[in-house]
Amino acid sequence: MAIMITDECINCGACEPECPNTAIYEGGVAWTWGGGTALTEVEIDGGEVVAGNAPQDPISEEYYYIVSDKCTECTGFHEEPQCAAVCPVDCCVDDPDYRETEDELLAKKQWLHAEV
Image (cartoon, rainbow, N blue to C red; front, side, top):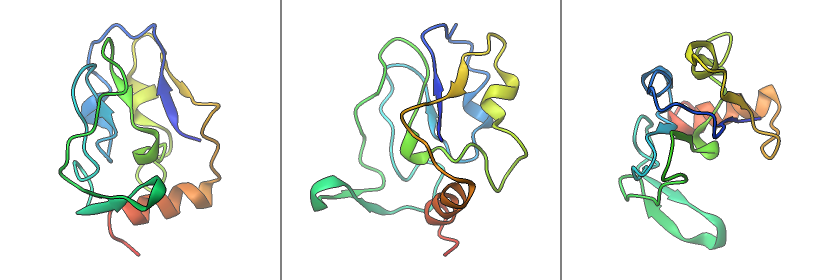
């Protein structure tokens, strides 16, 4: 499963530099598939191909957010999700809408970082 940031976020920014996939962004800031990954382009739902450096709409305008499709829960990098480990208000929690096995998370890491 991916990690999500709840609305209790105090916008301290401690989580953002800890993410090995650059899946965490400040509220209101556009994100990219390529940022922090080896992706140069991605085929999204419907078959549309998006450039890795093409800005995507922010998921939250108010507080830090995690792009679930880039989150691997730090699998293959660390023993636990680093965002949750450093969050001073414990608002980095499991996202019940994105359930993934450890094998799926490792496969996602390999895809993000061209390790396949």
